[in-house]
Amino acid sequence: MKRLRYVRHGDKEGQLIGQEGLDLTQKKTPKGNYTDLFYGPLYRTLQTILAAVCSFGCKARVHYPIEQIGTTDLFTGMATPGFKETVNSGSSNLEALDKVHKPSQVKKWEEMAAQGVKRMFDLIQEDGHGLCYGHDPVIPLAARAFGAKDAQSLDPLEYLDFQQDDSGEITVIFSI
Image 1 (cartoon, helix red, strand yellow):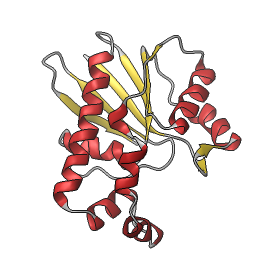
Image 2: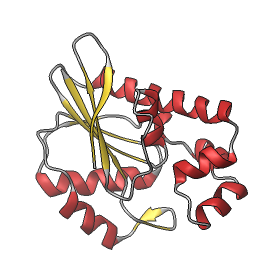
Image 3: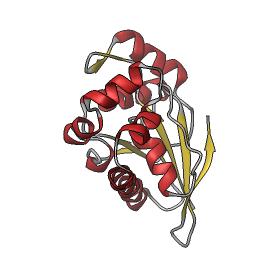
């Protein structure tokens, strides 16, 4: 059995996490006996995972960035002017994706997010527990891909837990 705690990165200031966000990450990082650490290719996820590691002295393996969970190109495609306007009008990131983009495109992003989760599980040691910092709405898109049809956007430092059983089936088992 493998587990993955998938956390939205901390509050950002522009494209980076400010000192206040890093301090909050250190206070709010879910404690656990993590064996593997993951992050997306954007710098703010690396900042968040580093702050988390410092908060609990983790001795886990740190992996290379997982491309499927958030490249600049991915977010450029998602964050169109219509998406930004919808978010500014009060919709969550996930709601805005569903309102603004074609269902076929949202489904492609869901599949990409699921590929990222599968990739992380491929890298997690047997009986291991991974910790990943990523982005909203990619995290709830991954949850939907694994059957959590009621998945919602996450606030900074909220997370979803995923579990992979011995047969390789991945499920969402807990959310905050």
